[in-house]
Length: 186
Length: 378
Image 1 (tube, one colour):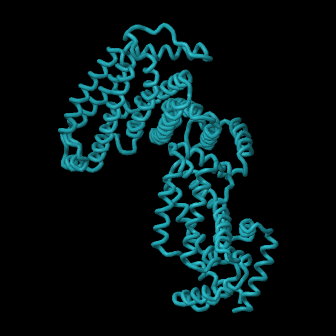
Image 2 (cartoon, rainbow over the protein chains, first blue to last red; image 1 turned 45 degrees about the horizontal axis):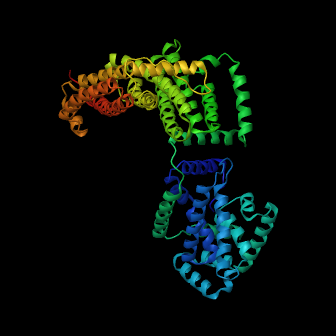
Image 3 (tube, rainbow over the protein chains, first blue to last red; image 1 turned 30 degrees about the vertical axis):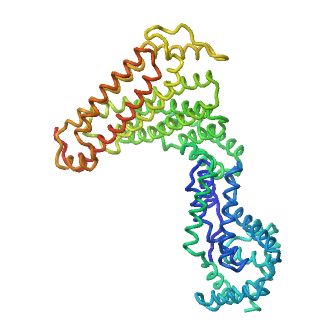
């Protein structure tokens, strides 16, 4: 488990990167990309199920971030870049499903996608984690994202609550139920 | 069971995108960033702002609270006996607080004009600190060297930032205000240059002690920046008197909404330009430096020195050409002053100054490398 609790040092570092960018240092944006693109990609991938789609949506997330930070005059004191990126990613996923004119159903209902993913994943991962991935994708979208943020990305309950716009108590309940469901599936 | 599941989640967290995609995506984003990124400000501004924000974050969650906390801290510490010494010795807690307050001052600057003025003020404070450190009796020589180096680097930051903000301010501030600002910057930078030159001259007397890390070596690098800052400001002042008859004092300098003191100070600097003294005095100092350069390279090089010479591609011929050319350029500067083309004179002087500083830095490096690695034969 990635026990990466977002702490003030990390937030300071992000604030420095944003300030450097605001002062015209282009490389600072590259550093932001290096720092967060993998976790944003993972978050999207486990929501949409396709590598190519996840890649496209990840690049959209960073393009949107670029637009916002180059236009706005945000104060970077207390600014939480990581949470902000996940919030953009959530909106991008919603837009994606809207544009596709389909509901974001649990991916298990999408037979074609599921068989593709499980076959592909089985080739390079232990069967147990592929099974878990399969089970994870059987969860409804809103529950799945909470589980991904908490256990795959190792965020604190408080941080997850901030991103999904729910109270920490509600997040705790969702996680408890999701784990029960995953245990009974596996 | 739950632990086992969490371990499996850990494996999922290793899912990563394709490396080639990551690379391509980053490249494309960087190209976009190049188009939309805000105009680059100077590094020091960004760094100062960040440090200030970071301090505020560290201390309390909002800037007003941080300012209140800082003020309280200064009052408490300032009332102790350590205050006097700590106010000019870097690394002392009160000095750090003083720097932080200065950063807040910069953060509150509302325009490049104001920002430039603050940098000039900070530069003056540093000059005062240099004097206090040199005269301090409770510091050892090596402590003094250390503190001086820190302060010189700070002067360098202030001078380059003042210069950057000044050039920004020139685009959107009225002529009167720019003239006044140019006066402030030229005076602060001149004081800084004088102070640095004193340390350099003392260092040259004791050449055996000259090394990469000595205060005199650092000062040699920094004086180039302060002199350029000064002449950038002088250029603006000189434009006011272009075409005036040399050696004929200016009777009156009037600025709207300005105090008599400022008008008198401005008149004095402009008169210095018109009366030939200022540019020529600068030129004489520069020529001295060029002669010092010539003296240094006349040292017969040891084997190590020869190697360093070839590594730096600093051939004797190139140096000789520079010495000849510098005499010619100095002649042009004098001609321009005599013809009342004061701003042209400052511009030519500036380019000569830049070239001299670059060359002096190379020669210093060469000499230092030679001393460190081998023997320098006179």
